[in-house]
Image 1 (cartoon, rainbow, N blue to C red):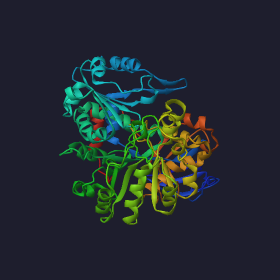
Image 2 (image 1 turned 90 degrees about the vertical axis):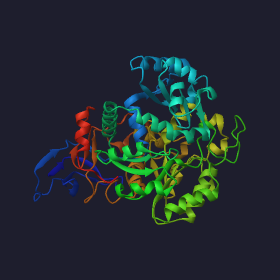
Image 3 (image 1 turned 90 degrees about the horizontal axis):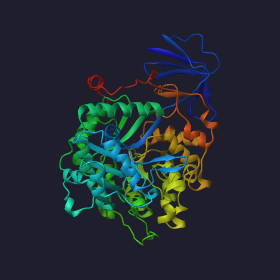
Image 4 (image 1 turned 60 degrees about the horizontal axis):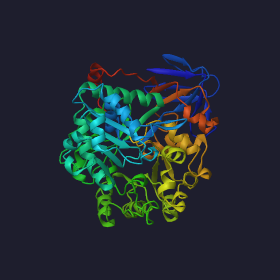
Length: 528
C-alpha cells in the first residue's frame, strides 16, 4: 500500500526549521519527501490532502508501568484532579466520597485501584487508613497510590490478598516497605482482572495513546519479589500484539529471570523501578540525600550497598544489556553512576528521574553515554499546588533541579509520564519543561518536543527508525491545527493531536469488546 500525503506543514524534527510539504509512504515507511508540489513521477494508490495542517512525528513515552496502567484504566480512577482552582478533592472526606460513589456501582467482590492521590495537597497530609477504605468501599479490596508512587494505602481485604496481617497494619505502606510490596500488589490486582475488564483496559490504553500522539512506550514490568510472576508473562504475551509499540524493560536484578524473555525482545533491555530502585522519592522521605529532610530530620539512605549494585549492573552489562535504574537523591544517582562507569558496554544506560543530581554528577552525566528520564510535569504541579519540595527539602537541594543545563550539555534528556503514577498526558510534561520549576531552566517548545521524539528514540536506541520524519523511517506521525513551536506553555497544556497515524494508516479506535481482544491476539506477534 502506498499513500501520498501532501499540502501539509511536515515538521521533520531534524531541526526546528526543517519543514516539508509532502511525503510518500510505502509499506509503512517514508519513501520520499519534498517541498512545494509533489514530484510528478511519484506512483501511489492513495492521495491524502493534509489541508495545510501541521504534522509531527509520534511521541515516545519511555517510562510507563504498562500493565498497572491498563489495570487502573480498567478498574479504577484518579483519586485527585488538578483544576484551575487547585487540587480537588483536597480532603480525606472528599476522596472518601468519590470512592464511595464509585464503589456503590461495583460488584461486592470487585477490586478497585486508584492512582494520583496527591498526598501533600490533602489538608490532613496523610494517606487514608484501612479502616477508612473499608468504610468507603464497603469492605471491597482497594488500593490507593500516591502521585509519586511511593506511598500506598490498602483496605483490609487488600491486605489479606497480598499476605499482610491487617491486625499489624493500618493499611499505609511507605518507604522501602512500600517498594518491596509492590510486586505482590500489582500481581494480585492484575490476577483479579476479568477478561472483559482486561479488554476494556487495553482498549482505553490504545485510545489514550492515539489521542495523545504516542506510538511507543517503554514498559517497565516485572515483580521480582514474587516467587512466580505469571502477570509479567501475560504482559509480554499481550504487548506483542498491541498496535502501540512496546519496548520491554524487566525489573529483575536476577539475570536468570530475564533470559527466558530475551527471544521476545527487539533489543536486550532491563531495569526501571521495582528491584532497580536505588532509593524512593522525596514525597515519602525516602529519596537518598546526604542532608536530612528539613521537616522531620530523617536521613534516607540507598536501598543497596555499592558492591551489591555493582554486581547487578555487571551481570547485565557483561551480556550486552541496556540498563535503566531509578535514582532521585544525589546519593542514589552517585551510586548508579559509579556502577555504570565501571561497566560500560556501548549501550545507552538510563537513569530514571535523576532529579537532584549534584555538580559532580552533572559533570559525569555530560561526559558519559547516558539517557535521563524525567517527569517535569510533577515538579510543575508541585510548585503550584503541592509544595512538597519546599516543605521537605532545603533550598540548595531544590536549586539542583535542572533541565536546560542538561540539554545544553548534550545529555539525552527525555520527558516521560511514569504512568500510572502520573497521567500519560505528554503535554503536561512538556508544560513542565517549558515552565520549569527553576524558571531559568525552562526550554522552548521545540526542545520540549525533542524530549519525546528525537531524544526518546535515542534513549530506546531506535533513532534509526523513529523520533523524526525522514526518508527510510517509520511513518508514525500525527496532525494538528496548531504550530506547536509557537505555543505558550499554557497553550501546550491544552494541545491535542487531530489524527494519529501508525505506519501511514489512521490509528484504530477500540471499543473494549472481547471480540476485539480476540482478534488482536490472533494477529502476528511482534518483538518488544
